[in-house]
Image (cartoon, rainbow, N blue to C red):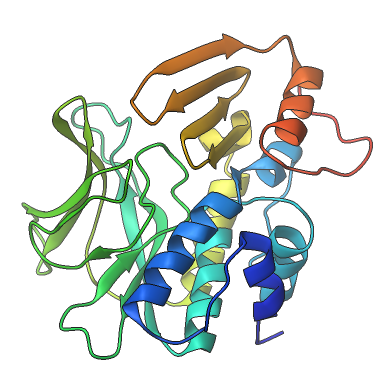
Length: 271
């Protein structure tokens, strides 16, 4: 399968409009996708690596009432944007969020550079980060660019790098301070590169995605995050409510009722 059913994709994310390669379309499509499809890592938890084949992604994320993680989300958006007429380059980032001082993680996060006809600068697009600090709209690829993607606030800065390419860092405002999310260079990657990275993240026994369920859902006025059995709701004003679920059965119910994730009948989560 080389093309995505755009009408089905637009219906899935609730987007209406004329699909043209404009900045307005990029922004509105990005926000609609972020609000329309949840983040989840259930394939690795259940013992397999998710397919990045476009037909499989369409069946799962568009028609199957499922979510996915970064490679799935951003491959789907990559396909949609290219069909609409945007020029899109795959990039790879090193996640900084949650890293201890001095930790150097591998570059495992997929994101997109999008060139918009008539615009002087490219844009960073990313609908697959999932967290409460994730982009809701694309941000201009320009040093010190800031984006008020309500209710979130982001900026892009350059950080020191020993290599020949400039290092970019996406930050989000939290409690009056800037919190790093991930860093990246503009070196282009190809789809087969992410087949390898996807397999590593999904199947390596030391990968956190193998050890616990991670699900995220961004709503118009709040954000839901499930980490193992810990359910956290973050309101638009930053207020946090947290509760511990009773076990895997309640987690399945929460995934279905609160995250909108439909799993096959008889699915059981590890204890």
